[in-house]
Every structure is written in structure tokens, then in C-alpha cells.
Image 1 (cartoon, rainbow, N blue to C red):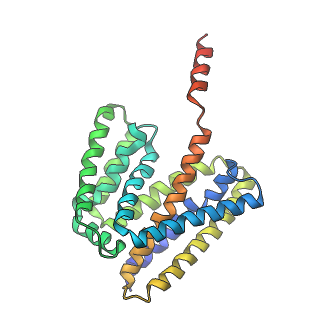
Image 2 (image 1 turned 180 degrees about the vertical axis):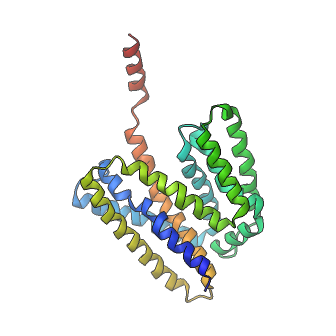
Length: 272
């Protein structure tokens, strides 16, 4: 058994999964559901989308992997959407593509594992190109970017050089992306909501691990090594859970953004 992979999965469970497990609390706070039956419908829909994404990955792994890379760039880019153009897409492109520049063979091997041996090499080349695209998108606003963004970007770029792709991703996801999301949402919760949120996150994280364990047991009947099973559980699991998470975040952002006409009216009123 590869101890480093076991540690990676533990780290992902303890620091990565909880930020998605907060979704039911956010959904309730933003009135996606307001009753017990509404909660049941929310959980059923969330699980249904996840299982549909999983089924799609099993039958169309290359297409699913390509989509996963694309929507991950968009999702991670939102960490800096207020400072970078195109909703922070430049940041997402650089973050996701950097490991392919320095560890292309390892990235290709991971893609082979999680696509069940079907991943073409052009996916790695596409990631390498995405870094250049991200830098090109950042150039027009380079003088306006904050020191914090530059330090984070440079730090992650160095991390991509030093660490193998799996640990680079875990460092970013578990110590930057997830905490940033959790802290941002946590400060808007009341004391009572925080107590409920902790219970919900622990329950859903445990349930997610149980579901992944059951699915892994099914896959273990095939000739799959522990290493391959670990990569598949981590990346395919995250890929399928990210879809309903992104949909919820997009709905919340849309519902909390005032219409453009009302903004213009407010500005005109202030001017007058």
C-alpha cells in the first residue's frame, strides 16, 4: 500500500470535502429550499446530478475528463473573479495547466488512470497551452493586480515545479481553494447556523466517503491496483461532486446579483 496516497486521501477528506459539504446550508440560507420536503428534493437532485455525472464518466471518460478540466478552470478562476477579467479564467488556466509544463509524463499517467486507459496525449498539450492563454489574459491588467494575487500565483507556480502533480493539486485545493470558500461563507452564518453547518458537513463528508468506499469495492472486483483506485476515487469523485456544487454556486450568485437596470437606476439617483 502506498502510504503517500493514503495520506493524500485523508487530507482530501479532512480539508477538501467539507467545503462542498456546506452546500445544503448555503442552499437553505439562500432559499433554494425552505421546508423538509424541499430539503429532500435538494438532496435528491444533488445526488442525482452526481450519479449522472459518474455514469457519464464511466461510459465517456475522455469527454468527461475534458469537461472536468474546462469547468475546473472556470470554478477555480472564480477565486479571483473580482480582480481578473473573464471571471478569473486566466487564474484557472494557469493553476490547472502548470503541472503539465513540468511533469507532463506524470500528468499523462494520471489521466490514463482516471480515464481507464483512454486519455490521449493532446489533453496534456492542451493544458500546457492553457498556461500561455492564462498569461495572455492577465497581461492587460498586470499593473492593476494585487500583491496577494501575484504572491499566490508565483508560489503556486513554484509548487508546480517542486511537487508532483497530485500533491501540487492537494496543496492548492486543500490549503487555498477550500479554506477560502469556507471562510468566506462561514462569516455570513449566525451562531446557530454554524452549529448546524458543522453537523451537516460532518454527516455529508462521512456519507460521501461511504459512497466512494462502496463504489471502490465494486471496482476492486476488476483488476485495479490500490494506486489506480486511489486516483480514481479522488479525481473522479471530485469531478462528479463539483458539478452540482458549481450549479448551486452559479444559482446563488445569479440570485444575489441585482439586475443591471436597478444598478443603473441607483447610480442615476445618487448622481441626481
